[in-house]
Length: 407
Image 1 (cartoon, rainbow, N blue to C red):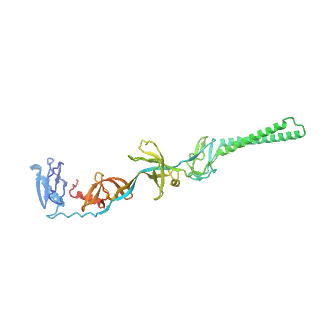
Image 2 (cartoon, rainbow, N blue to C red):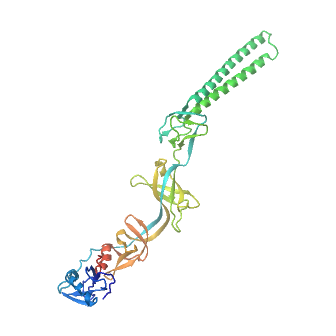
Image 3 (cartoon, one colour):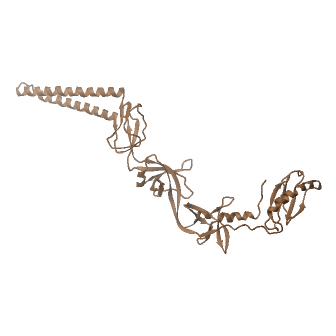
């Protein structure tokens, strides 16, 4: 018999000799606090007091009818208990396959090559002619700057061009006069060459003024320096910018890469050249290759890697992605259907195998997982036959022999 130390309780123990009986625990109200244990053995309609409290506490026997009635669940009236139905079981041989060891990743698509729009002059953004994320061609106007400062600067440059043009006109007339005087033998020595030099200087000054105006107009009307996708806009209409400020970027096509974070596993570190697969739209996967990685892990234990590949051109910059890196390959790995693996109360994996017409429980060590299968790295022979359906029923059948009903 078993001694019960819980105060105010009694335990009904169905003896091991009686097949099908189960250990049950019941609260006993009204029992003296000095009652340490009351054990009863009921079998085939008999209730026998085996060990009890002091004589004055035998009033607790008033609970016998209730206890006996509940204990009767463990056995019948002189008949053998009903047999537990056998679980439906299906088996299958283990499968030998090629297993890829992977590390999951999460990251974001970005452009490997970008061209920035930088303000050359101070002004106010008066127009943004391209939508965020839109594709642009080289030379297309994206930003326009205006405002009082821009207007004043443009006016001064236009005036400079006009003044230079008048100087060219005056120098041209001076040269023409010098030529006429030379023909009339009235020109002073060197007058014609001096007039020609004056005209050349005026023309150079005019060209400089026009070029300066053109550069200014280009600086306030910013065009795309290359074809690509307009992204990372940092200014809004009406905002004042100064020379050197970045207004946005052009992401060149065909230069998409992925910056991703992974968590290495012992002995399974990522390396350049390893193959990676990125989850695409639907069931599609995009192939990529590890091209670079940080030499050290972050404080959180992650390592940043960069992936490239032609398939990544389908991704827009800024797209969040998930996938995995293949860090190792195991040929001839032992695998079983996922339904064959059972987790016990300590979360330890086990399987049931057929052995001499019986089902034998085998503790195993699991490895990689795939769609519907789990790799077994130890504890299972390559020629074993495993239970694929009914494994959990077989495992829990052990607990039908004896169990305790809690209060």
